[in-house]
Amino acid sequence: MKMRMKSMFFVPALILIAAGGFAQPIQRARPEMRDRLAHMQRSPSSILFVLKARQEELNITKEQLNQIEEMTFAFEEKMIAMESEARTSRLEMKRHMMDRENLDYGKIKTALDKAADKRSEMFIARLMHREDLMNVLTPEQQDALKSMIKDRLRDRRAFLRNRRFPGERQDPRFPRLRERFENQER
Picture 1 (cartoon, helix red, strand yellow):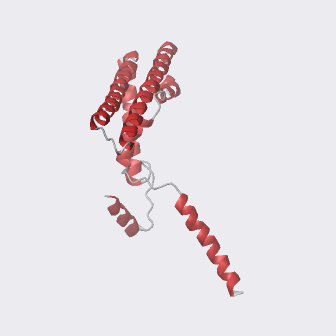
Picture 2: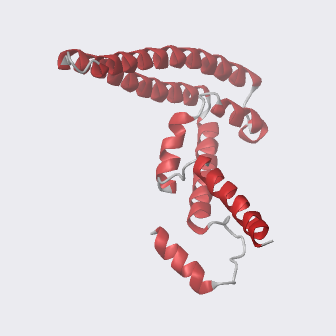
Picture 3: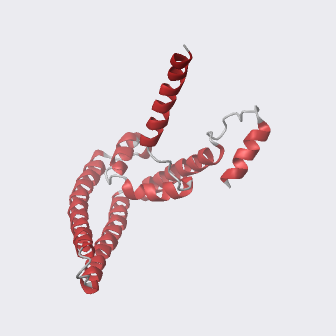
């Protein structure tokens, strides 16, 4: 009977421990850094979805939206090609580094420079695309979009800082524990 009770306790515990080993690792980057890095991973068409959703609020015409859509999809095709070239350069660099007997630092540096150049070209292309999109909008629409983005970022920062939305009631329970948790984050 004791053996059965022990197995009823230890088997689920072992399963939980094993499942924890396969879980995704905790993101160790600070929330501010994750937000800064997240814009690099977003699809260029995300602005298109925002503009379509806020079309009436921003007074965007269908012609403007069609022009932005064409520009966005052309830009995405260009980015896919550039990303492919950058990945090919990184693979070439990895191949040169794997050959431990005949390390050729010149070839490694050339491949590394080529990949870095592609990354910088992609960054400049993103900036130019953003500027081209803003040029399609009128100054009033640009101001409204900028204020909308600023409000969203402010709300996101407030949420990440306090773990709640602005204006939401603060939980009065466990004040000492909450203070200790907040001090650890800083």
